[in-house]
Length: 302
Image (cartoon, rainbow, N blue to C red; front, side, top):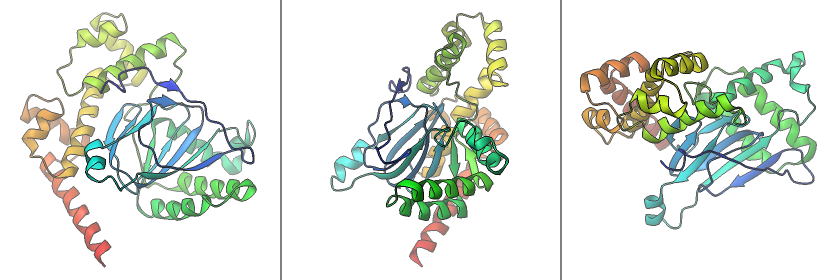
């Protein structure tokens, strides 16, 4: 976890001479923990490892379609054991990067593109798309790799229109990652986020996180709630539950093991908090996830 407990580095992105946007096939997962002012759309064709996006940690899923807002820190780490055992396999993703103002400072503020402007605002927390939307966009991203110039811009706008109009998405982060890292207050709250990501599986004391911002316990509680509209322990619980969901989806761990692996020290409290956040018990959630995997496997077989 040392990777994401450090300050993200700025990544300079230079579009090719003939284009205002970057369209590339990325075959590397070992990127630094970084941010950039460009919006990033990522479609994973193949890959085994872990996504780190803002405050969230999740397993890389082949076929995942993600949208990262400007300056949202992120990276992807490969599963080294998997690739050591399968040296002939290579991760692959289609990546599109563009600045919000690449068509002009107020282009997306006109009425016809207002819905896309709202999409880019939502992307500040990171978005994960699913269902028919993912399938429609994936097919277009496969084609966009062969385009450049105006055809690539028109295709990108069509993709953004699809993403802006759908409800088949979920936020990657429970709260917005503060990206104005040059501001003193934002740097402090980001230190709390980064420390939490690095240590959420361990016992965390309020005194420790309050010391990161040079606040007393009570002052820190007010400070954190003012920035996130929720208590620190509510935020910590959501991070732990998100990680628990990942473990349960894998189907290899029993509920008790998941409870202690994601930072809870009491099974009863884990069950209670999980149901409060997810609306299902851990056992119900795992059963639902396994049924989805089974249905997907049957569909692929046909």
